Amino acid sequence: MSRLVRMDQTGHTTVAEWTTDDPRAIDAAVAAFRAELDQGYYAVVSRGEGRAEQVRELPVDAGLVILRRPIAGG
Amino acid sequence: MARGREVGTSATRVDGEGARLPELAGVYWRPRTTDRSLTRTDRLWTLSTVAHALPFVAAAAVLAWLKPVLAPISLVLLVHAWAIPELYAARGAGVVRRDDRRDHPGEPVALGLLGDLVDHSTRELHARTRLVLERGRLGTWLIGEAGALLVRPGGHRVHCYCVKVPDRELPPSDRTAHLLLALRTDERGFATVANLAFSGAVWRLRRRLPAPAREALDSAAAASRRG
Image (cartoon, rainbow over all chains, first blue to last red; front, side, top):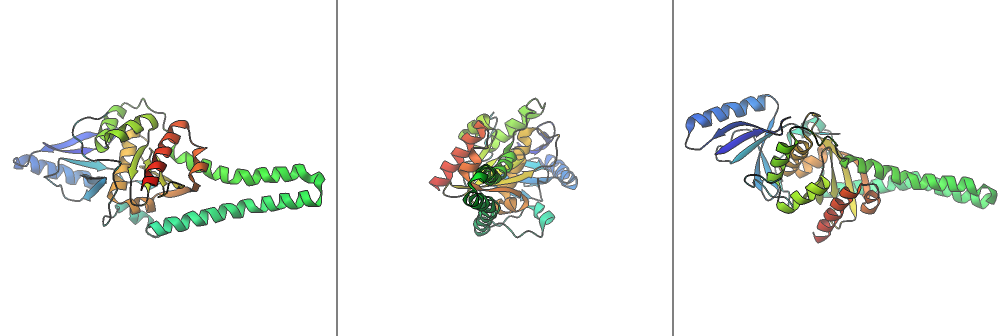
């Protein structure tokens, strides 16, 4: 089960869940993903070895996609 | 703190080359940080500190030489010369100041997600110090809730950055996770977006840190020495 989670005031919220063999769940996840990006979130997928990749399309094969807010110099 | 599947590892090298943080658009006038630019910044910072302190030392020496009776004034000037780099270091230490809102209702959940992003030893260090150690190409990073320290290779020099997610309502560990993910996406971009608060010797910063952060700094310096 893959998850799309948003880091927010609750710690994190699961926005969508899907499996690669469930097209309807994928469609719902893609719609939710785009809605979150429209709200100003950035989507990041951990790639291991201290690496992460920002994505603009939902990678349906990823186990976990994390939505984060923009950062700024303090 | 660890829950669920490991989705990443820490204490491993940040890569991120080729990727670009979208936040760079907000600081388009800044040249992208490189290893060389960090070295240059470090030298300029040292030069600037010396330029601020040296006149006080020189004036103290001249006064004491001209009129020994003015030695107390010379002493005051020397205190000023000593205080200037200490004030800079204190400003640098401030970037990893802890948020004491540990009772944020979302913190346990945020801590779980952050724990999934790092390995066991990093989780333990974070539990003690509230700082996440992450090795990168530019050096070894310590990520806090509203700032980051970069210990340069060799473990003797450190850069202190003010950088944060501008949302005070987020739990502390979520804010750390935001910075960690941005760092892993684009390390050089992360250093470019962040505002430099201090650059100097590790020992000078260390004296200004609270004990838990000193432990994290020692770990980062040791990691940087190992290369």
